[in-house]
Length: 382
Image 1 (tube, helix red, strand yellow):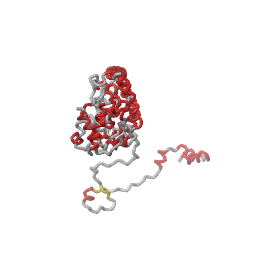
Image 2: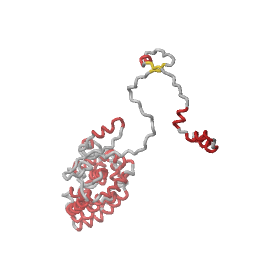
Image 3: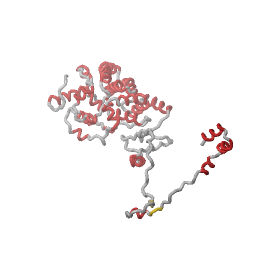
Image 4: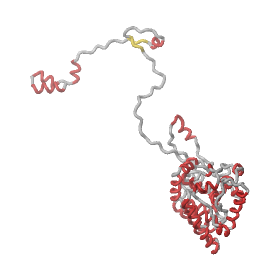
């Protein structure tokens, strides 16, 4: 159309050219001959349903479909699913699961975060036992618990627990990362097991043979009147993941006593704190092992530094990360075999053993069981 108008203008052919130039789309359309549309007769849909033959030129009328017709398929949009919120399986109090159940329906992913309760000041709690603190409150609590807790190490374990939580946030991130580097540690972080009288069958452990980890652990608890429930819950760590890392460290502390054959005396608690500092780099362990010996006499403090500190540093640095050991899966394992696997050893210096009565009693008891053939693990060098 446009080309014919330009051609006429170029040739300048008088009235024909003017008519071509002044022509409009509507006028051109009007000049075209009308198109004849054949008449189509419609037939009712009942004729189709009954299978009747339709005459030529008859088109069926179809009933509208009652089922939902899917829209044309389009390429799926690319989006990322938010990670699932961390729900704390290690605490009896858990958020409502109604939102999660709705999100699971028809395979859909719910992006609604679970709502935990808030404290009396209106601050949101990240897990049921969480006590939110600002920077000033955290610093004040760390100083107060450090001054009073370290000097009253044996009588105020709650202050030591507070000190460990208010000073370990950045260090816990490193410990959490070390746990995730091994398959066993990753399994712990996925399962989040806990050690308590509700989760550990102590009667089953009492039925194991002497020399297994489970039997020696429960013997250690019964001998000193300790239960797995004696450890403090975590309160002052904001991250739920790091809070579990701290809880795991706290609940497995008594297993370290069993592993290294250390009685729950002040000297050996301090020795174990040195092991924990060298192994996990937690500030509370360093503070406890630095200021805790001040409660000893000058003579015993020198003996402790000479006999136990070098050994404890060596065990912590050479052995595997203790927080990444899945102890619950090793109850029936021989404790001697476990020590060799983890790369740790007990204090085997006879002179040191003779100077510390609590440690000597435990070693003599084990030797007696070995002589009677009641110890499951193979003999070690003495």
